[in-house]
Length: 290
Figure 1 (spheres, rainbow, N blue to C red):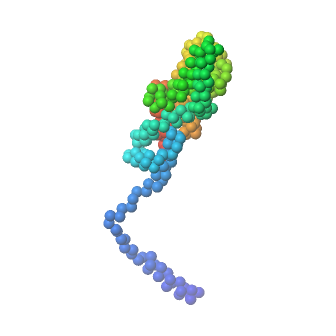
Figure 2 (tube, helix red, strand yellow; figure 1 turned 30 degrees about the vertical axis):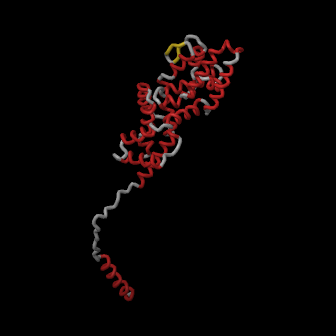
Figure 3 (cartoon, one colour; figure 1 turned 180 degrees about the vertical axis):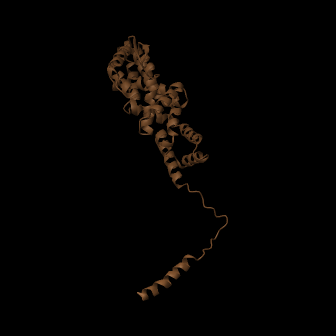
């Protein structure tokens, strides 16, 4: 027992002396550690990549990525920085094409421009055949409607049309009618594509009546042609709410909350500015990943 104490006591004193030894702190001048942006950079890299993929269908080039990162860093990823960054992506010449591609995918089962051109070519042949002379005016009209679909990217790019007119052209043409044959299928497709719901019995009856060329009331508006039906449909609050839902489900993978739906649908009805709607969602902390 006494021998054990004799061994432990000196060790205790040695540890005490070591623990009390003063350590001199050495300061190296002009050696400030850089700020740690590791996590933020990863977050911003993801945000930039997702924005380009969503809006242009591709990742940014090295130069585009560097520019985007600089823009977002200016004021610590402020709201205005985010909007400036997105404006740069919207200004890319390919953005209208991407918007058109998304529209074709959503409303035309992905029908490409060659399919439209093939129908135009067929109809132009019919215009040379006197057997169809009685319906030449209708054929010319169908050609014109399909040509306006092909003109969508150019017209979006020069600002002569907005998202509402793009949607009108996408659902008012021969190809859309072939996909949704018959009056009832056409009316149902409009509700499902843009309102994300099936029409009520009264809405379906009124819609069919109007599309078939008779006077009817749909969404509290009066009309008597297919053109009237589409115009009423694509300027309604229900359509605006459908666009808000579409943006939320595609970009945030969730339904908008009541307050979000009310605020953004009213904003969209007031200006029909689709890019403003996209920015309202794509500049949120939720989408950025902060």
